[in-house]
Length: 143
Image 1 (spheres, rainbow, N blue to C red):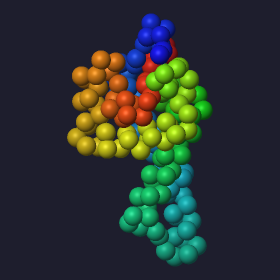
Image 2 (cartoon, helix red, strand yellow):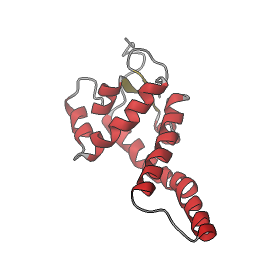
Image 3 (cartoon, one colour):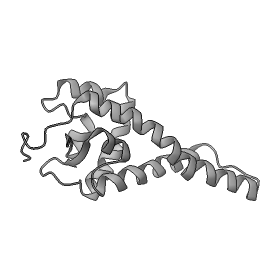
Image 4 (cartoon, rainbow, N blue to C red):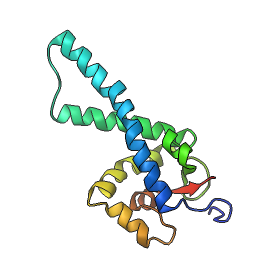
């Protein structure tokens, strides 16, 4: 298990601030990876994909973004700014691919179901979100 004195769990405020900053950064990710291709496809083929296809595209795009950064260093840009990192719960290294994917998939119901994952963190002894517990990851403070 990780040494809590060396890498303490990130506080809830810091994690929520990072989440808010991340949402702003994701506007750029979505503009580049979603809107631009759809504009080009719409102009070129005179059709714009809608409905479930658009949602699948968004979820895959965001999944690639988060899993890539969590897997390679454990941090997105927002997490770097706020001095937090996602690590494997059993060691202080970035999560392996399957854990990063599991964390991404589980974060959606955890956060969207009335913030259940955030509420969970209020009662969790290490202040970890529910999806971190289920995925075998944890968020630590590095500065």
